[in-house]
Length: 459
Image (cartoon, rainbow, N blue to C red; front, side, top):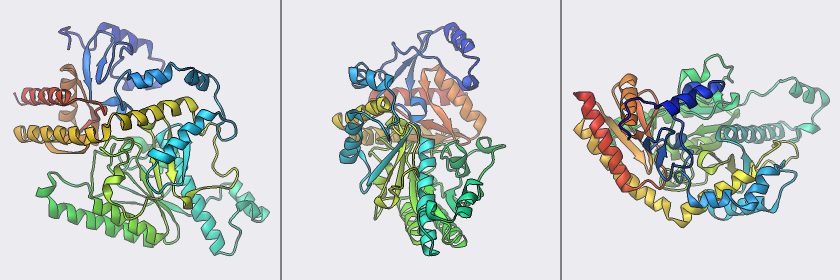
């Protein structure tokens, strides 16, 4: 990084002032030079270089200015898709079918029969929950001797729906979970109070998440007890809301909640309880999907006995949405529809990301390099046990803890000044989200910088 004494530098500061009209300006940490940033190296407007382990909250997959993505963006087909937006469910172009066919043939999780596309991950969660409510509602009407189709109900019943009579159905989610900031997903989000302050929420139940301690071999009994307690709580909640649970919603790894893990056996238990209750088992893979954990979908590592009912995606996919089994294929006209439901230009980029992951063997690479990165973090924590603890991760979804939020934030600022850009999660955890092309040399560079920062903090 440059030896210039000021940070941020003058050009970045001036750019930040220019952006003050933007309500999001209070969050902005850097302004980068798009042309000069390449691979995992982010260059700011003052020429300072950073190793990017942030990847824009895991949006990034292939680093900056990857040739495969630039080739797509420079193509005539991309230009036409960008300047000719469509209401894709009603009107589209053949390129959309390239995307859908590739998902079906190569990239959808096994067992999925349909895909539903929206603009972002939180919107995908919202759409998946709507599908779960629709299926439950139709099932309950049929059980009561009523038509499944709501338009065949008496006029007064339809009027009640228009007047927000709603439903007593619920979604069960987990303490510490994060599923988006729309008012539907927010009702299932339980990671930070600031996310929900002053916002109305559906009175949906939540249950504990077991949040494994690490190293796991030192906490076998503690983790087993926590998982048993969580499963018992889930069973009780499902029984209390018998026949009213539309979905059980969970992340394979809780990201925003603090990179919190549970065992594969725990998730198999959650799925079994959801199935017994007649509820959709919905996996939120917005952050864990598209290769971050070393498999295309993190739940591939859970050895589930049957496919989840729905898998939500976003971030690296460039679009949001969900995959669904045949039971959650909503076919009634008008039930599941939004104007866009598929940005063709973003789909082209998303497909290029997936194709590059496949062509460059990045899943195996992430598994191997991620294991090495975790071993370096474990050594780092052994060297600084008073400051750094609980190293954990799958693939390139990595984290470790500091004793307090203040110390964690101080660590991140010091690391950034040394040219390594990491981020925060939970209350005191350092979140690492390397691009899938991060090299072993860059892993070593990051860990050496972290070691120096921790040494500096102890001095």
